[in-house]
Length: 435
Ligand code: NAP
Ligand code: HSE
Image 1: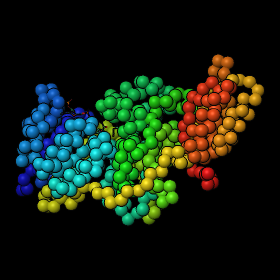
Image 2 (image 1 turned 180 degrees about the vertical axis):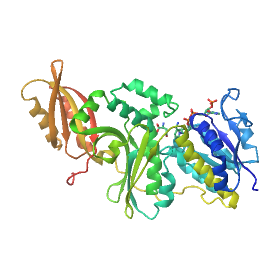
Image 3 (image 1 turned 30 degrees about the horizontal axis):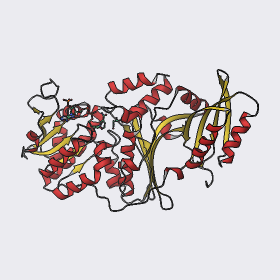
């Protein structure tokens, strides 16, 4: 019988404990797929004295050297999260000749190039399926199964925490604070949930997906990001009245004329849109290619066992390579660098909610302000009063982002406008060319 393949696990939190649990539960399945037993030997944690499940017979340590210097350990699985020391530990593991698996989108979105270069230099595998979409297979499909295509667009819901929150706020009218707490309790949220609600987690994933799909380097810094912290129950209610739902979308487009456009922001989605029914912790990602057309990937985007499923798939892939004597997938390589499309040049319809003076001529003044900046209005409604003020909701036709920004500046300077409460994109296809 083949010798067991030994693993060093860095981190035994939500995902790490899921990996321990599922790998023990499915040991026989994994053995049959690899042709050798795959076993976790050592686990690195901050607090090595804490009692934890699924640890019987394992070495529990708070010293990385215990794993790096153990020649028997062939694969290091990094599930600590954060940039440091996760990045340094992974680089050191590769330096020590170990293959690396990670779910860490922070490191890949910021230092992906270094990680891939180090893996290539050291001739070790570096896999990261769980870094995007939790349990959904999306990295390998883009890196391998869809390589025949020129991919033009990747769009989806890639953050489980915010999707869970928006779903509960929409369906049950729960408060922002209580749904965030629920998402944390369920293990969906990052250690610092600001990364989820401010859109950074989704932006890191968008950067990774765009790099792989368009074969160009996209880091977090190149992604325009807006989170859900400004979304109010009023916006959710207006969306419902108008036939939409609000979702946090990651959008990456590659067009020869405009360049690469990668952004994360909340958007009104028509209720009939396939992403509108993706609820709770589920994620879904559309990929558009010039041969396949559209493909959609759907599943649980966060949580202990779904994410463990993706991590273990990478472990199995590397373990098979170890058994056969050839780790086939070394690391992703980027061979191009494309131009980026500035956010000001991106095009969308917009929902704009305003508090204005309730007096004759106000609607006209507002319509003129939009019109003067080249923003054409699709519809305007006035349904409620807030004290002495009237609330107006306008939906625009498609317009460049710079025009809506200019219109916002002009509107804020009008004496009749007390407040621009919200500006949210409306994700519908444009009906004509936009100047
Ligand atoms: P977590 O619950 O916070 O667990 C982190 C684990 O790492 C803990 O066991 C912690 O030790 C250990 N750790 C942290 N810093 C350490 C250090 N400096 N030295 C030694 N051990 C350290 O995190 P998680 O939710 O499992 O997430 C892990 C990774 O998976 C992150 O990159 C995250 O983005 C990614 N991810 C998470 C999910 C999800 O649904 N949660 C889904 C996809 C990807 P102690 O237990 O002693 O504190
Ligand atoms: N915090 C992340 C989310 C975990 O909610 O999607 C999965 O990457």
